[in-house]
Length: 281
View 1 (cartoon, rainbow, N blue to C red):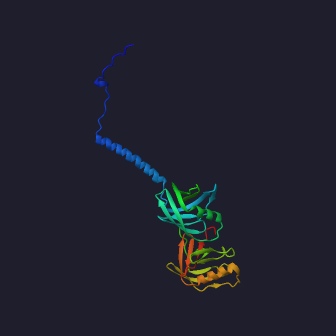
View 2: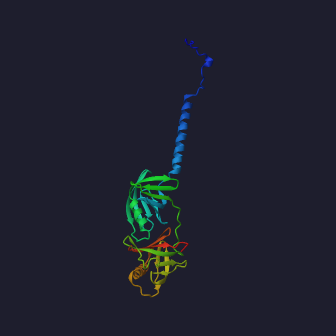
View 3: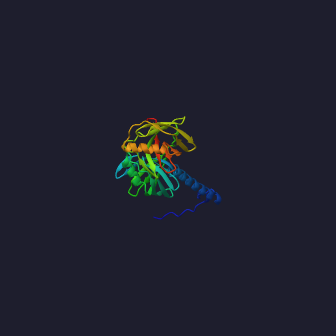
């Protein structure tokens, strides 16, 4: 079979191309590339919040178990330092960030109170150290250890400081030399006081009820002479009462309120921490 000869292309058979100036074509390519990059960056920034800020701890996963966090467990993450609460005990740590992908945590100081949920406290303290990978999502932050354990957090709502006056404060710990010790069971929940709007003070020292008059000047509170009932208080409760009586009578105390926690500190470093009663209380 003989193939027919090839027919030469005529001008009308040839495809035509609209002329696009080189500069315009290059501009179009660059614009499309920038648009794609911009959208990717916007999407990433929308779902990847900055690790720095205040975070409420929701849960821990470790050893195949999930431990749900107490309400007060949180982290306040700064550029190179972290302040937080394991759920009962407060702590500080040094944080060294590698961009936003990981952080190396070096534990600092912490209080040493005996708390109700020590299982969670102990697990949190064990996980929040060393190199941790950072996984970010909308309003969420998850820290992961090398063995796959996690600390899951969500953005913490702003906490309004409780007022110093008109609030019932329950003493949680006694501070001495930078170390905080929780109250013994005999006095826990009993040592309370309220500074009324007219600065009269009333409460319980852990055993005996008391009253006094306070003076507030700036960030200092000075308690006048205490009047109290005269029950004989022995043992740990009696020791707490003697410590509080001495503290309240030691002169001006520096008062600091952070959220629902009050710290009263004497010039010699001795003091107390107290928690504001909730609406339910």
